[in-house]
Amino acid sequence: MSEPDSPRARPVGINHVAIEVGSVDEALEFYGEIFEFDLRGRSESMAFVDMGDQFLALSEPSVGGSDDHAHFGLVVDDRDVVEDRLDDIEAERLPGSGLDFRDPWGNRVQVVAYEDVQFTKADHVLAGMGLSGLEKTDDALAELDEKGMAPD
Image (cartoon, rainbow, N blue to C red):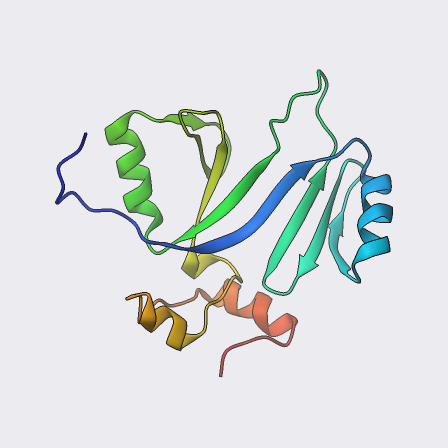
């Protein structure tokens, strides 16, 4: 166990959830019967269902039926601190461009920094969480602005 005073990142929220489905077309049809939604993006084996500043990723399993794409995207206040902590505890890091790891039970977690993604909390909510002053990058603000959701 680590020292109680070692730095920790604060979770801010869930950016996205990625699940595996047998068929992206069938999943879009099924969820489309229940919910009205817009597609954020689509490929042959993946679809991204827009939910404002969050999304649901639907993907077909890779060869062999692995659920390697199933994960959730956790937004944090300080991605670098998470990276350092994962190294300190020797957690299983996953290759790729992001900061992905598996917990001891095999759950895949993708860590993203609040400043880098369009996921947003209202200022009063951030203040209530003790996270006042979190900023967004220009790219994240542009994504929000493109959807008409840029902060005032």
